[in-house]
Length: 155
Image 1 (cartoon, one colour):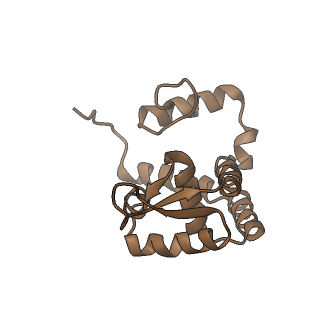
Image 2 (image 1 turned 60 degrees about the vertical axis):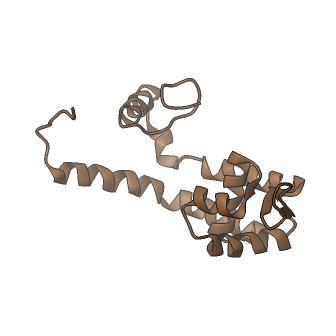
């Protein structure tokens, strides 16, 4: 059963606004845009690279499901990656009609860089004491947010 709390919906909305503001903080956005500019890719193809790094080679359909988008959209994401030799498209061994998207060695390097940029926290978090960060992480974990390392939500 979900516990009831005495706060109103406005408080929850205010907290969510603050969280979203951190995610979209100018330093985070600038870092992501700078990386995309440097590698000559848009946000969608970079997201596809990060997905392939996380889950390995995938069929176009499975990649679309992972990214929660249409298969035709994935085709548009994969084309620039293939043109830049960041991925290969190869027929599936069990069904030649199915194409498997696989990172090239260079694509893996770029995907790792993209993941590093994506995981770089907003500068403002550096202003918090370690105990404050631990407390914030604990609250977010109670909400089911994934975390890294040996903590309850992440592996």
